[in-house]
Length: 343
Image (cartoon, rainbow, N blue to C red; front, side):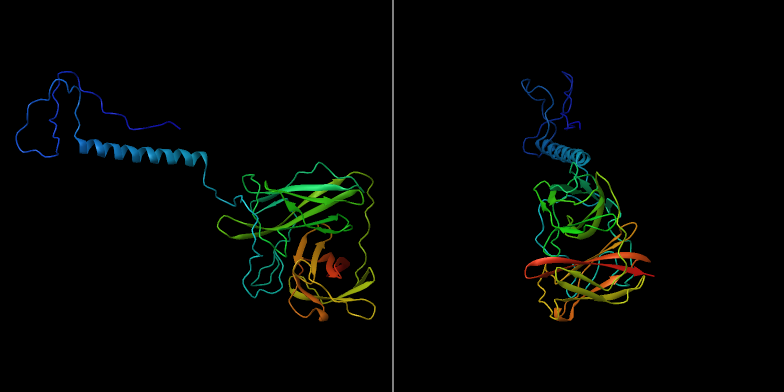
């Protein structure tokens, strides 16, 4: 940017007539004699000089601001932040069970999450070099804004600012992980994938924008793990599943395009074990659609856990879905898996 400071007035030619100088700003008679020879050049009234300096300063400030604005344009979308927010997920008080991607007023299903690497101005950018089947590794990534800057401010949802779900494309090998973030906005988490194939990683998060608004997103990216890949067929639909000595059953009648309850009950033999809070809730449910692996993350209703954990689920379309129900007993988190068919 060119510095355009106001210049000084040009000097009059030698011998030319000049306006009379009035030291006190007043004039009480006819024009006085020309100034003494030693006061060569143009003599400017002090008030005029002060006015010129003020006007020139204002012009310079405007030009400087314009130039800086061109160097650092004002954002027109989401912007990167500088700290992890210590606030919980932003919903009005009294909000019940819900899922992201469903209209809260109509209950109508919107597009499922996790189908794209970018959405709403946010992008999931993997940084890891690669993974090997059966070997301990690390998955590193950033969430970037619309101009490519790493985002570093997220709302805490279910006790964590970032939830990472990893599953193979045949819907086996489900893992629910919680990465940690470095100061530069890089998330990292230990990750071991047991078998070769194409795995899908879902980043489930809520960004806090500059104006304090919250933007919930689920972005997905494929992770290719070299080696022989023999996809497994999806298990048939079932209402119960066994895991580590527990029997988990679910009830409900999901319908396409309608929101309805799914209730999960955990038994240990003939007893009902005491469910513990895991990430702020008595249960978590992730539903993935067979084929495109569309992602639904639902949240439970509050209520007595002896009667089971109830979720409100809207099925976005017909097809088969794999349900992953996380629950905690005696400090250990387990996952019960089911296949659901929506006609």
